[in-house]
Length: 315
Length: 325
Image 1 (tube, helix red, strand yellow):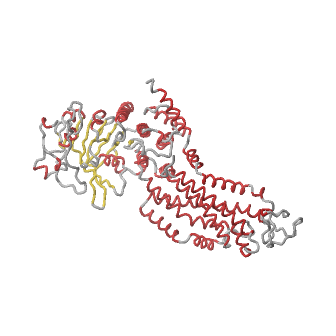
Image 2 (spheres, rainbow over the protein chains, first blue to last red):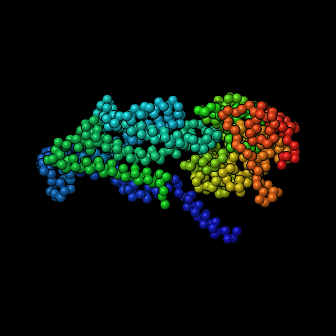
Image 3 (cartoon, each protein chain N blue to C red):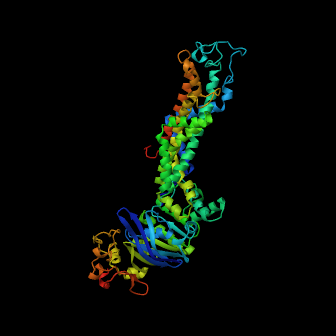
């Protein structure tokens, strides 16, 4: 017994360590071990800060035309750019003016808001609807499963952007309708994903054990099935936000999303596309903004998938 | 308290119906411990799941019989009444402790949830009850382990947690479905002792399913041996070990190592394999493997018959005492 006692105390220390770490803390630690996830997380955080603090960062009113405003140089829009960001010192507009004489920097900054809004909200809606449908299909099974999943197959059969365009055309152009259209095109992904997880989880022994304890089906679904199947959905959702932002920009580019004068990256691109050769900066900045945002979400999503997938061997 | 009459459960497959349970009947007094023994596929677990109303339908279906629990037929209960009964009055412990617990919820969360399902207690009372239950099943330092996850527990401790969950509402009947199979021998003994102790403390009846006759010997009052979905022998514990009377039971007992057997003595196995449960012939299902079979065995499936006041077998042959060991 004496010989065993130091070992035991060491065990105790080990146990204490384990005890302090919660599953979420563990997952966060894992995620932070992946450089790509960290970079993605930094990008997303910075973008969120920009979106929240847009009025503080923006130098001008994003929808105010600078023509005739006192103190303006009177430089005509669309002319050779003189941009502080490119080393020209005498101008006061960081990214220059757009075709209507509005401050492009402020517009790009404010554009972060609508893009992130559309990205987060449309994916959240899609996850909510898709998960409910998928869990119902997977858990109830039989005819219900068949009906739900065949409808999802029909939705999947359309090219995503084409479907979004048709939905927005029916609902009428606008950022909110674009958001709804995008989220509908995303529903089948999450329905399939959650159905697949539910099918594997519901045969597990602890679900039978819960039945044996007399738990109600709803309780089993929400307390036991969902928490076990949520990881792939979170990962897919993060990756989806990037795609949704891209889709929103595309819809706005086509004139179906954000309506002028609302600042939105796709919409800025659309307005400026005819001046690509004379004023490339007008498409350069919003384009870069879209790219960085999508990159951030993709990096984070990828890192998260690696970190949360138990099948990948980690040391 | 529990009376099972002619229970029949089938599973439909593409090749035909599997007759998993073929007319099983037994009864259980309050506080009594019953051991059900048999090899894999003999219908032990399916009978218990039928009693709990947990047979997945489809493919499973209970096609006949009655399960009377405290005077009510479980098979005719509404889903609501069934849920009310499960966990509350009949609880079950499963074979694999590690997979029977939800890996993403803490132990405390899972046990207190099972308390909350059936009792009107609030969250704090449920937590107190959880600590009490964990102490009862012998988990040291219970307060501090509430926030641990199942993977931080060993198999034996998980099984203790499962038992704590099962006992959360003071059930009158605990069904233990091979609770020690996945555990090593010393932990097995601990779990057997724990259940035996709790049975005496709480006065509940226990049905102990196992294929380990050693486990049965230490913790039950009477033994049922099942083969091919039927009961082949039913006897009080002492009578069973002193006077096993069905050739299958005798074979099972012979296949166990004994303390008084010689070193290097080979264990005797029962030749052959259990029959296919899809097309059961009219004969005794054990005939192909039976050394004592007579002509009559091939024509008629023997009914359960009394050989003395408490001992029943389903066999046409009376095996002489000297061939039983």
